[in-house]
Length: 61
Image (cartoon, rainbow, N blue to C red; front, side):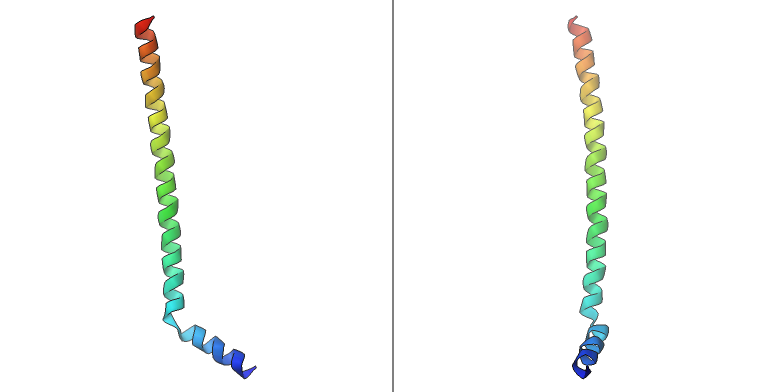
C-alpha cells in the first residue's frame, strides 16, 4: 500500500503528465478543425463543379 501511495504522489506532482494531457486536447481540437475545414471546402467544390457542369450542358444544348 505504501508503494501505491508513493506512486500516486509522484504522478500527482509530475508536470509531464499534465502537459501531455493538454497537448492531447489541443491536438484533438486541431484535428476537428482540420476535418471541418476539409468537409466545408469539399462541399463548396462539389457545388461549384455542379454549377459548371450545368452551365456547360446548357451551352452545348
